[in-house]
Length: 306
Image (spheres, helix red, strand yellow):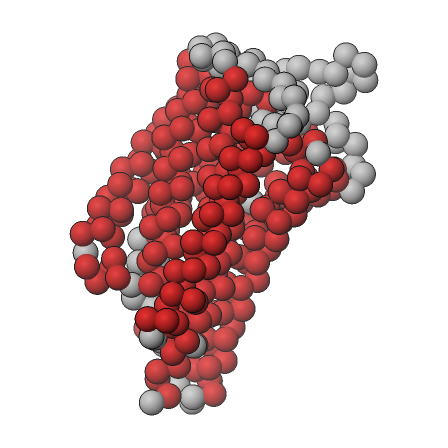
């Protein structure tokens, strides 16, 4: 574990999680391999089943699964290779770190942003489906927002990692090359990424998902229909499963990072932050398994009035 020679204090960027490397190795190998298999099977099903492929609510899920593969096939294998090579990034060249950072930050944060859109879009799909029932409506209210978000994610992370003028420090003796690209030290871009690409989407996923659950229950009551748990089980899982993953794995890390941003000394909470950061891999590992419940058709409650 590295320390700052001047302050003799350890910070998140220059330290490594205390969990023994052999344990991390087996955790990553076991969970990543099973997650990849599940992801590929889901993508195969979604691409070959015409009804599922055409279902609007599955389009974001497909993109999220593909982004998750960035972590499963680039980020995690790079971490495994780091452990196998006795704690050294191989090959020890800048491009290794840049590709790793693109997967670790670009694809992961991109997934969080798209999850927020998926949570918002479910309100339209369930209560206002008529807005996107026409070809024009689908283009403006479904395909265009997804395309804009994807373009933003790709453009932002290509710019900050490969074009933005700053000097990166590549520490090949730490996972993810110390997980601190130089753009994150920039007052504007670093703050923009933390707030816009991390905090806001994570909070929106939780708020919008649970708000939709409340709206579903209230709508049923207004229609004087008794809520059948078995009938609503799939809907409930759709609403809260991905949100729960987000709350468990993203929110704690964001809270600690926000505390440091607000003045908490960098040496405080480092161990917890390291564990929270490592646990975020489980969001990617578990996502395809929870997506099994999301690909089921969404009931359009607004149509029940007719």
